[in-house]
Every structure is written in structure tokens, then in C-alpha cells.
Picture 1 (cartoon, rainbow, N blue to C red):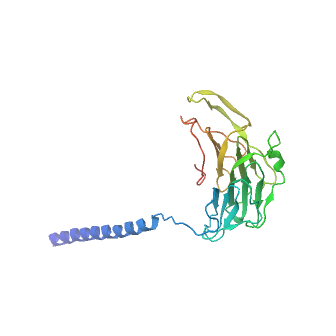
Picture 2: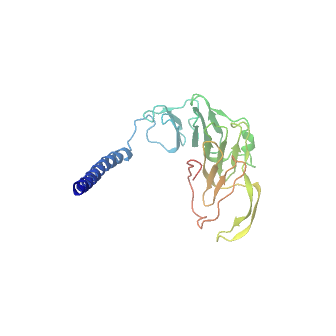
Picture 3: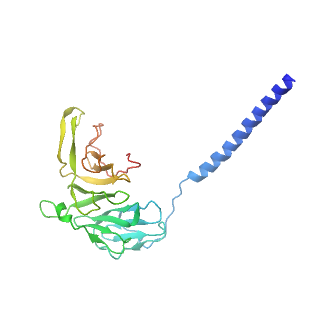
Length: 263
């Protein structure tokens, strides 16, 4: 009796292992099919143009894209069809665009050497910001805007420019101010990684900003500088600090994306 039971236990174990391997094979095959990326050419009205930037709402249905001297285009069916936004200037040098996650009708976009624009009706009409005069350069010229970013509810907003400043708003774009450096002891480093001083706050200054992004709640915000540093805020844009030198400060940084508050 003992030998008979022992034989069956082993047999059950072997059969179970075979069945488990078979099921894992099926699951692996199914998983391979579901994660295979598929790219296809969409049919749209925009055609081949000098596209600059694109934004996708979290629902995957609403999208926006900007064109150099070609207007601002919007899709409301997952990218299948695109229409030119009649309320936005069509001959402007568009560069960046962002969509608020909580409201696909709220978007901001920027034009190089011109205005920042905002829509609250899905692109039907676009208006400039009432407080935008504070963003003018000392020469009176408009900045060479590059990056735009929004928190999910659009309360926190961030924009930056090439050879210019970074501006932030914490009241849905009603008022804007220049981004400020934070304070940190023993953190300022030279290009060799040697500690040479402290960060003591104040205006970050004009830099070659190229892109920016933020977390859904707006607490974490970040921007990159071409041939410079990455600047990060963890206090809703009140202050920014670069990370510790990593040996590659001279690299060209053109884009950045935050996922769950992390780079």
C-alpha cells in the first residue's frame, strides 16, 4: 500500500508539472501577443508638415499637435482624423502643447517669439494669458518658447524658453512668476564633480531650456537645459534644484517625461 501511494503521488506531481508548463506556455503566448507594439500610419487631414510637438489626453481619444507655421491640429477620435483649430493662429511658429488630464478641453500651447495660448473649450477658441507681460524679456521681445506642462487639474502650469527663463503658475495661469532656485548646502558642483559651494536661492537665470513636464498633482516638476542641467522641483514649482553632477553635464538634453513623479 505504501509503494502504491508513493507512486501515485509522484505521478500526480509529474502530471501537475506538465499541466502547469502547458498553461504557462499558453499564457506566455497570449502575453506576447498583447504587448507586441503596433504602429500604423493614420489617415488625417494634416498631411506631411513640420510637426513640432504632440500631446495625448489620458483617455487616448483627444490629441493635439502643433506645426511650424501651420497651425494647431486636434483629433477627438484617437488620432484617426485631425482638424485644424480655427481659433488658433495658422501662420504662427508653434512649438509646444499640453492637455490637462482632468479636462480634455483645457490645453495650453506656445509660439516661438510670441504668445502663450490657452483653450477651455477643446480648441474652438484660444486666448492669451492676462498676466503674460511679466514674461517679456528685458528687450521687450517675447521669449523663444519651447516647453509647456500642466498638472492634471491645470492648477499648476510650467513653461520655458530657449535662451530665456522658466515661468510657473500655481493659480490656473492667472499669474506667472520666474522659477526660483532652492537652497542646499554643499551641493553646488563644478564640471569635475567637486563641491564648490551652496545653492542660496534666487532667480535661476536665462538658460537654453528645451522641455518640461510635471506629475499629475503638480508636486514634482522638471525641466531640461540643452548643454546644461536638469532642474527638478518637489514643492509644486516653488523652487528648483539640479541633481548632483553625474559626469555628463555637457550633454544635449532635449526632452523629458515624468511618470508617477519620477524621471
